[in-house]
Length: 312
Ligand code: G3H
Ligand code: 13P
Ligand code: ZN
Image 1: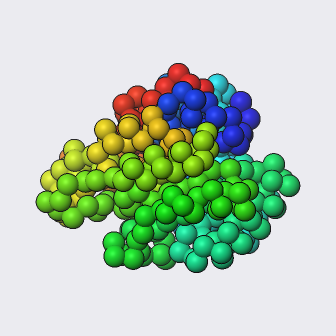
Image 2: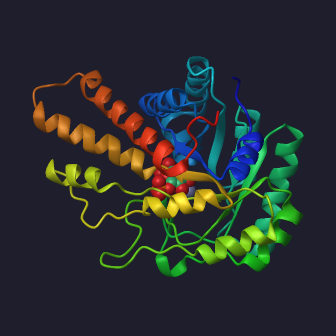
């Protein structure tokens, strides 16, 4: 199957009460680990690339690696998406440069400016057959050069969503209901909570419209333990409980963003490997199990969290 937009994927996910995983890609092993799991489980997938990924790996390398994955996984729909596009220019570069979907992230701007920037991206994207995700509400956490403290984060206001979607023409909407970026999502000792009431309210106001959840890593404690046992230091790393994500996937959430869990899977695997084999120095030796760890983690998400297996 060729590169696709998310339109059909999200329609099926909404109707079927499941979500499509959107996994961040930064290198070949990550692309391979994710797509091999999706191919084996017959699952659709969004491969997403951040500004930081483009700076690290280079736009052309990332696009060509995704094209290679599409050749190797002929049975599943794959979308290539810009994650957290900061401005029109970055979105345009990705639209012109082979992406099928972009996110314009104006969530830190006042509502009118967010609408203005998103509308400009939507007009250009739609004229080129590309779909657009926009965001309302601010997540806490760290991405690239943006660091939003918990105090400065804000839940999405359901009363804004209809006007935002109508005025911008965006194809999907990321909302803030208590998820956050990174591996430290809740204060230690506090109970993880998501505002399902906001999600329900948004869904009522936008019937059938695909909602996106960012900051949805679960920070599996087996990875944290392994990292800490093998020289790492990640005390109090906590994620979103999987059952909450399953619940969201049954509702209007059609896309669930996962990056930190990929980083944790790789780091846990490599730390463990180096401890066991201090004399090894061929990157293929330690990147092979790291790639397998990504594949296993993604397969687990597809089967137990997203419910997208068999839905390609
Ligand atoms: O939401 C942010 C993603 O995890 C991407 O992270 O900006 O460090 O590539 P990054
Ligand atoms: P996590 O940090 O929870 O993996 O979130 C990733 C994300 O939202 C990418 O846009
Ligand atoms: Zn995000």
